[in-house]
Length: 191
Image (cartoon, rainbow, N blue to C red; front, top):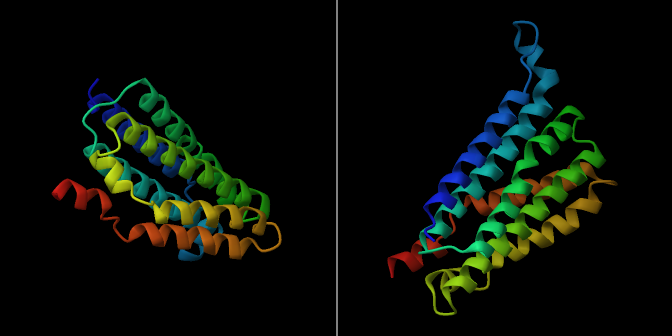
């Protein structure tokens, strides 16, 4: 089966997730800039989550360009990823509304961890479907950034309880690490 429906559906789900996140942000009462202060944690958590969703959308798009077809296993692996991404608005809102408190921040990290694992599963399902000499298999390589991201999440989740700001710094570090464009897919497509 072709990958077009999978890509279109995924794009739509990610767009809806971003829309839900922004709609959860409440407009402050008042007209002074200081009236924005109470929603600053909500806005910052939205910004971080928007960046993560943008990274997933971008990498998902590049990964699917290396694929020529999908099957049932890939469809379910993709749904697994979309499930975890669909929880981002909830954990973003909880974290922001509670000023980056420990438990919401740990759960936020848990959702990021599960999304990273789901992305790994999807990438390897696609690679398995296309074979050991496929473009996607070559592009994945050792997946250093993916493995480091998982390790960082595993460290940050329990760290959120004694040191929420340190855990948040790790989440930001992972986002910054992925903002540097990952050239693996483009390099392989250019070969």
